[in-house]
Amino acid sequence: MASSKMTSQEMMRRLIAFDTTSRNSNLQLIDFVRDYLDGYGVKSLLVHDDTGAKANLFATIGPEDKGGICLSGHTDVVPVDGQDWHSDPWEMIEKDGRLFGRGVADMKGFLAVALAAVPKFAAAGLKTPIHLLFSHDEEVGCIGVRKALALMKDWDVKPVGCIVGEPTGMQVTTAHKGKKSVRCHVHGHECHSSLAPQGVNAVEYAAEVIAHLKRISRRMAEEGPFDPDYDVPYTTVHTGVINGGTALNIVPKDCHFDFEFRYVPGVDPEELFDDVRGFAERNLQPEMNRISPETGFSWRELSAFPGLNTPLDAEITTTAKSLAQVNGTIKVAYGTEAGLIQNIGIPTVICGPGHIAQAHKPDEYVDIAQIKQCDAFMDRLVERLSE
Image (cartoon, rainbow, N blue to C red):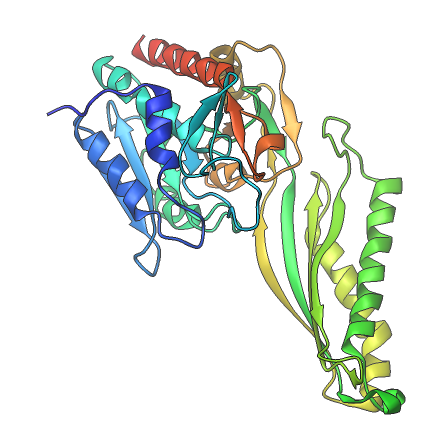
């Protein structure tokens, strides 16, 4: 028996009501999508994480013996904790031509449009299939999709192209920066602050490394390499979190800080990391060890994902431009799962409703006009793949 048809806005309302903040399970949403697809005779493959509390979903509409176009997006959203919302973030509302709610832009709007189009996909007699790939834990380092991609890369038949529906204002995006984030633990030596020279101040040595990161940041901004198609046209270096010390009269034993590189094509993030680690371990650690041999630095990668750089003449690029009815392409500074998907041999672009400037904020919104543009995009996709 077919599922009840829903408009894109009605589907968005259903998806927004699931609190899929990355710290939570996404299984209620995934189960809803699976059952909805099943109502149209579309079977889903669920790829769970190691805990069983989260899952990716992959489904094919149309012939299963040939590649097709994959519509991909993540189901998780960022927290609303501490944000000053003027409405319930888990209840979508409409006001002044906009839809408000956590995830409407990033990126349940795209998922809703794709799902609302499933009845058309299923009834169209597709000659080329449409695939759906919905992931978890994108917002915490593009973690979840990796397990699904590990399966997909060995399939004899896999999508010939992918469109990731992150918010781009329905512009076709062929490139984004890569990212590497690291946590540094500075191991100091504790003592009374009146005897400070006998201790190793973990906070102060952390500050020296952070200052070196700032020097690298300035060098990137001044010397490049540059890519003017990005809104920030060079590699950025950023320290976002620091914790250390217990009391003013104690020389701190420990300090942790987190930093990241968001790099343009042509920049090797491992070389940047080696620069930072080498500065700390060559310039600072010998001085620390002269006071206490157990002092020093340890490093842990928090997350990493590759950049995306799809050729302008790639078939998926020209297809997406035709579907979006745009002539050009753009590049974005934020990261997505697109680079990971491309790395398993599926050419990928990004195109979705809304704008990243509205994402992750209180009162997140998407313009209804953007949703209508995405609806039209799906209509053209059905026509193209039915020919």
